[in-house]
Length: 274
Image (cartoon, rainbow, N blue to C red; front, top):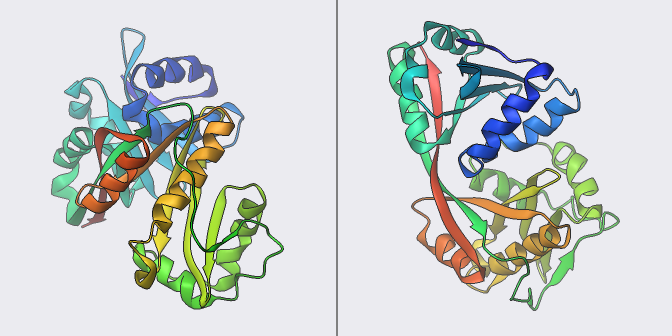
């Protein structure tokens, strides 16, 4: 049976996510918010004999996050109806799971684009390397760094996002600087690198947004930023994770060098409906 889940189903959701932790890491932050009564998401589940065998999360950011343990869920007409109703632009999950969802909705699509990534997890409880670079760390909100519009435009372009205004960019990042969830690196000519903890729960954190200006790459700045962010999570007693594009062999090698290990392949499907 496929249907919408309520707060009374939280124990079922938690048990399911614990059973498939690495495959469902995208769900962790939303579950924490759902538990606290923050209505940022809609959870749907496929129940069989009183147990979940599929979990589907429609977020307020036009995304469907999906996981199932039995492909029988793909044959349920109500799943297709829910997708048609919410019309998510992004479908996220473990690679084979997303491929299964694509087969369900492919006839309703005008176009689609696949982005394959790898989930990597830090394999130890302490960091063995130091984040030493001959540049200044910016991790205090009092630093007036958000006037360097060109740097932030470069960041947005790097990750394929729509360029925001400087006010939009700085709105949340100032608070993150104070909380040491966001690091900037400054060289003689201005800002040259950044990275942040993109998602954080009581148990885990996912780092990302690692960017270094082209002229300063291959100088250990990306590694140093990654080490700093990982240290913050480890000091809080949390597991550290990150996603890296499958074809970015240099980044994969960098993360493996500082202690991350590949866990599994993920996919984001960007779709456009007919």
